Image (cartoon, rainbow, N blue to C red):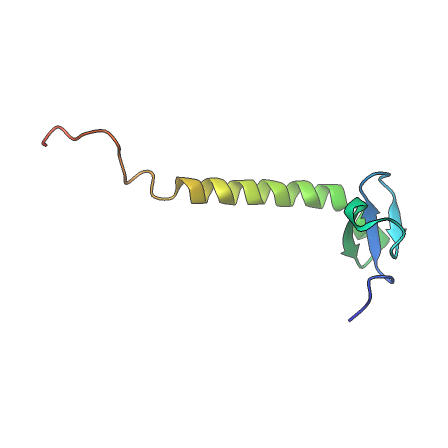
Length: 75
């Protein structure tokens, strides 16, 4: 297992790609194997956020089409 010092990171504050632990952890996204992958970090983060939001929406809506709070006419 590598220490992360040989990996690439995306600096969230500066928008720069860094090799190793140049910046504090809260300012980094990664690790990535190549500088090209690290440069795409904002796109990866946006896509993952969209996917997580969609999954949460599906989970929140689960079963909502089978349960109704309105009274039925035959009761």
